[in-house]
Amino acid sequence: MKRILTISMALVLLAGISACAGNTEPASTENTRVAVKIGITGEAETVIWKPVIEKLANEGIDAEIINFADYTLLNRALVDGDIDLNAFQHYAYLNNQIADEGFDIVSIGDTYISAMSIYSDKISDIGELKNGDKIAIPNDTVNLGRALSVGQGAGIITLGEPKSEVFELTDIVSNPLNIEFVQVDASQIPSILPDVAAGIINGNYALDFGLSPQNDAIFYDDVSFYPDNRYVNNITARAADSNNPAYLKIVAAYQSEETEQIYKDEFDGSYLPGWKSFSQDNPAELAASTEPVARVTVKVGVVGEMYQDLWAPVIESLASENIDVELVSFADYSLPNEALNNGDIDLNGFQHYAFLNGEVESKGYEITPIGDTILAAMCVYSDKLTDIIELKDGDKLAIPNDAVNLGRALSVLQGAGVLTLNDVEGSPELTDIIGNPKNIELVQVDAAQIPALLPDVAAGVINGNYAVDFGFKPSEDSIFYDDLDFYTDTRFVNIIAARTADKDSELYLRVVAAFQSDAVKQVLKDKFEGAFLAAW
Image 1: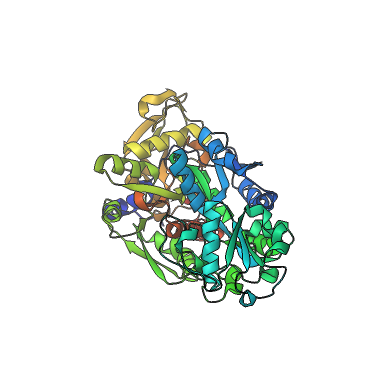
Image 2 (image 1 turned 90 degrees about the vertical axis):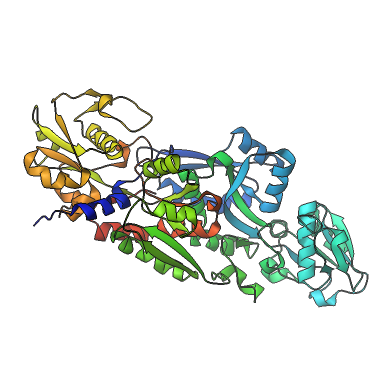
């Protein structure tokens, strides 16, 4: 028995799902693929990225790896548009490049931290160093500063407050063994180990020289030696592309258990997953640890009961990472963006791009989408017909009367072959109809009321949430089923939104990654009868 929503409940659900959409990035579908060029340097990166590329191919993203022989070229290539992303540098190097070259580029996600450990041909433990011994360290500013941090962690020296972003030799305030630090090109340190007591070597150079960081180092790297993430490598994009949905999918695909396994299997402790916080107690366990140092709560604003089911696997997954997601349910869809903008919640997940764009434009909110969630299927239903092709000349067809959903309904009807529309950048309007061969009469009605009006029209275009609440199973009962291909951009895709100042928060991007999972896809399939489509 089909049931009719009350108007008040319909308005609530309209906010949560129907009022949803549009960035300018095309959604990746089987027929709309996205090509992305990613600059790297070194063969190790090729090995790490191979399974990521395979995973992305299944999501409609064709990632091409461009290997540069000289790492100084990658940021320029990114700025010039020769590549779309690069993945080769840590934050300290990136920050230096931005300051020195004025590059308008930003990190969009962490990759790894390359273990920088101490090795020796002469001693087997750091405690065997003698007075006046020589230790080789890199001669470039950034890696020299990092080596000094490792030296302090090993108890060789004590450092004062740094005078610049990274430590310098002049920051040494104690050197009880009078160690002489010999500055050498970082790549050459492994080969001069016979000439010094020890050398502090980057993980990639150690590995290339046949050294095992976890087995051969006399002192192993530990992320606790560094006061922040300055030595964590990252995926970098042009600033204008920092919220590109395809690029954020690439970050999510990289930050996976498969990538961690490659670090362990192929690189013997040289790389540690930089997108996680590690236990600071036992350096030998760093590569396997997944626990953040402390628990943290993230408040997510939603509208409608359906989100409780949708977020359940996300909440469970993140709880194991010490992230507690608290859903804050709003009765009125006009409230979650205000609450987010004011800092009452950390994220919200109830709207599509079109709705957010309207809110930002009309209210001046500093809010930015950080990840796609779902597309609420907008299908065609009928009490009289079993297939869309059965429409007759002059039939009446009900569509939503609000501008956003009306435009979307027109796109669906074009996909069904009922109408032909002009190519438009924004949402289509009735005036954009250039073909209507069956002279269909489009009846504009409040979106929530269309299911109840089906006996009075030949068919109606109905939002997924209203269809489900009326008792329809979209994948079974519709006479024409929705498809992501009907839309020229992502305006009708729902999103997770954050304050613009927090758009690059690693914590919040982890929430996005947890949502964009197979577990959530299963909930969409099992609970919602095809009413919602995974949009990532």
